[in-house]
Image (tube, rainbow, N blue to C red; front, top):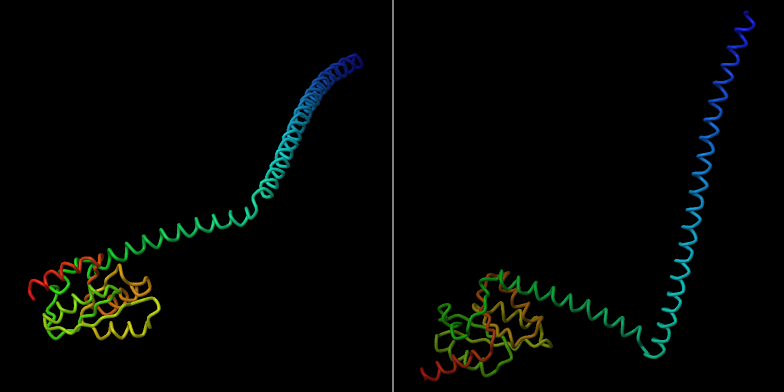
Amino acid sequence: MRLSADFHFLAEEHRVLVGRLGRVQQRCSDLLASQAAEIERLRGEVMRLRAHVITRDTALAYAREDLAALRAAIPGLPRRLALARRVEALMQRVQELMRERRALRAAAGSTAAVPLMRATALADLREKAVLCIGRDESGAHVARRMVEMAGGQFLHHTADEADDHAALEASLVAADLVICQSGCVGHNAYWRVQDHCRRTGKQCVLVEQPRALEVLRQRAAERG
């Protein structure tokens, strides 16, 4: 009976192990099938990517041929494109400088532009040196008459770009009041005047339009 019991136990154990083996084999078969399907999917993806690369390379080759033909048809095209990019960069820089200029002029309240007809009325000019900066000779002549009529000393500097900067600086130092015709001076001279007035706290009157001197000319004629 003992042998019979052992036999039945071994048979049952064998049956259990065979069942487990079957399940493991099934799981392995499922994994193999899944991996085979994934491999096929990846192979299809590789084929699609290769086709995409071929299409891209073909289009790129055609584009290069078209570009070469365009360059041959338009001499100097690369240089023109470089110049166009340079011009665009310069335009952006000009806009930045214009914004900086507007900000500086807005901040410099003491140097705000006013009509020239008020220039000689901003301060008592008696025994004071008034420097008129600008290339408008007729306007400078009228300003001279107004300053001298008020008892002041008139100074004039054209502030051309070719002028001696040291001479301009000396004129600014000698002046008690500065009248700057901003439309009739060079860019560098304009900023030199602005910088000097800010550093020294000297009163500076900016005249936007040289034609505003006509008002002083009329006033001088009425007084004369």
